[in-house]
Image (cartoon, rainbow, N blue to C red; front, side, top):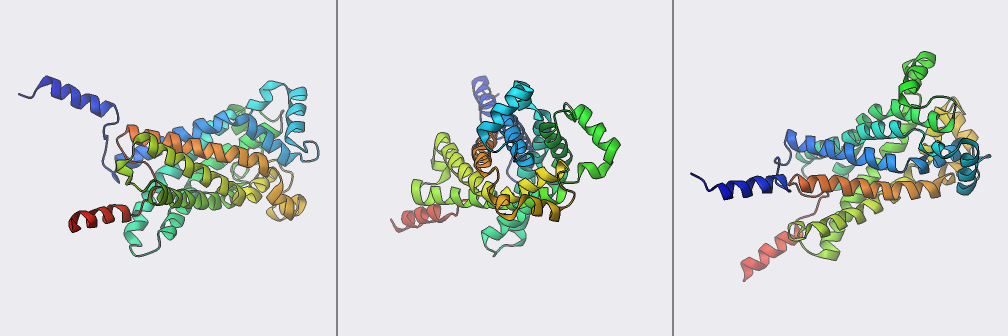
Length: 324
């Protein structure tokens, strides 16, 4: 009969950071999806006030010419509650998107790694993130359509419960997917750049700065790498995707009826510069927190943190041990 103390210690290790599943199994992808859902949904809710400012500056650029003007005007005209408009759309919409984005990225990365064995890793990162993002944005789009209108049109609806039936009654399903093409144009480049930058930054930090295997680093060190790579990924991705973000806001608020009209009305230069500072303020920290929460959930599940690390360090150590 086994020692009861040994059994208790094993159960405790399973509860605190014990491995709940093997990598690349259905359970593993489930953990990744849950981690992505919780990390994306909660972080997007936290920054709802900044998102309200961003959307209103995009939709009403003349009235809200700066962050301070937008803040004081909204506070004076609509009160403090205006800054939390659309929070439910952000939590559920970006939660679903996060589940698909992170969970399916891990799945497609494994699939493409097996198919494209001798290909450059960047190609695998690009293909995996793009494939996952298409599905993630189809799920997100209805929530985004409601969120943008609730934030920029105070009398449109209070939230999801009355926003969904109102759009469906007036526009049908088309109303929910009016901004799908520019949404894909915003989020696919963002996702490609974000995941690729994250993967390469993680590899760089372990190989060039820390110069230790991930397994030999403490949890704090591993999560620090995650945060640095996450911030770099979010900042670069926000710059790349800013033009499409302006177009999405314009189309969803019916400021223009087509992609061509949106580009013409906003102006080519404004596509890249309008609301960019506040978007960098939003996206950089949000993506950092998402990766931090996501990898924390993976660690608590007994799984390694995210990011591909080329095995040169491990191979060098083996070579040195054999030589001695």
